[in-house]
Length: 233
Picture (cartoon, rainbow, N blue to C red):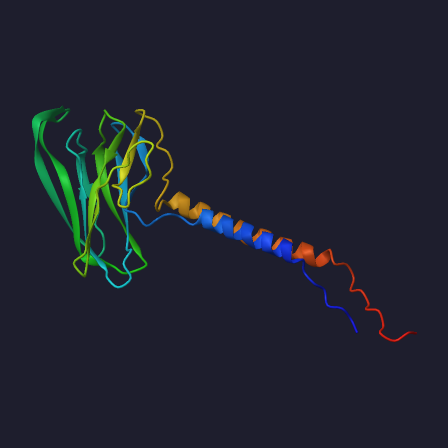
């Protein structure tokens, strides 16, 4: 009769806990409406992507509204066509007008809406706009957003995060403004592409570490030991 190799339970439990911890850490928090990139130089021209996830289990997102601040405004906002969606641009007067190289600017884009399409449960959509000139003053731009579902529910992503306070349930997308001419930081939090990639990498590392620990535990058992015979001889 041969004894079957046995794994050490404490080692397996510790390995499982470590892997689970890494996977939990790696899971991206993408359930908020966010702007990508998360930072950009003051006064620069940039394409901004507003990522909208569907958090409902039985309803589709059918309308997205992004609101642009007036003080200071983002100048020259043009939406990119999104397949299956119709974009509507709203403007508001600037008082006083802003002087530009092309003359005084008397209005700005204060809202862009996308409707007519559908984001099903468990999916997300990214809506792009070209911002020809970001504000030259201030530290950030707050874009408030409304997300309308097919069941009539409207989620208002309009809450601001106070310094030193936890993030509210429905935070507004925020673009951090960096020094003019500097490179914008990589997108982070709630749903960024970089966060998602990091999450996949860390998840893969956790799986590899768990498999290596199991293999090491198996090899440390050594050759199969023969059981002592019950009868003598």
